[in-house]
Image 1 (cartoon, helix red, strand yellow):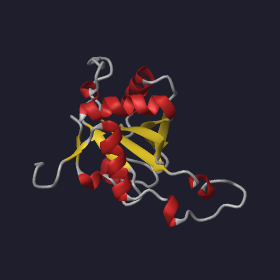
Image 2 (spheres, one colour):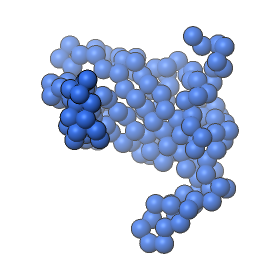
Image 3 (spheres, one colour):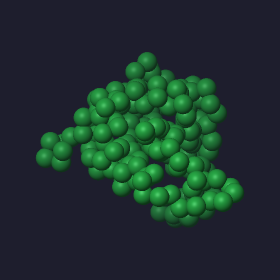
Image 4 (cartoon, helix red, strand yellow):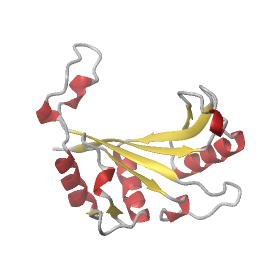
Length: 169
């Protein structure tokens, strides 16, 4: 039985403090949880990004909050995803172009325009053995979520249609 471990919502702001503050305000309005700022792992001089400089805002959702948000996020992308948006471990990642595409969200001129990346991490029972502190072990193949299992999970539980390559532009 597969279940959702967590849903991560990320907004990249490029390191500008004003954009970071607005992205943080947006996520805190959308959810009850407090967003966290992300930092750059490496310096990218072309984009004026310094190592360990703040570049974005993220939020992790679990349980019913994650399920509710996923329904809204899938509606924002019109319940259509590409098969390439699932990785070989069965995790799904997709983008929402503008936060206004989400149901019940209206444009706020004080915040401006932001898109977001949504990542969904799926697990099977017994997956905890790879993360626990004491006696950590490798996750056996039977306890890993495969690409096909992940695709079936989303099609069954969220009425998602995976659009094949010749169908999307």
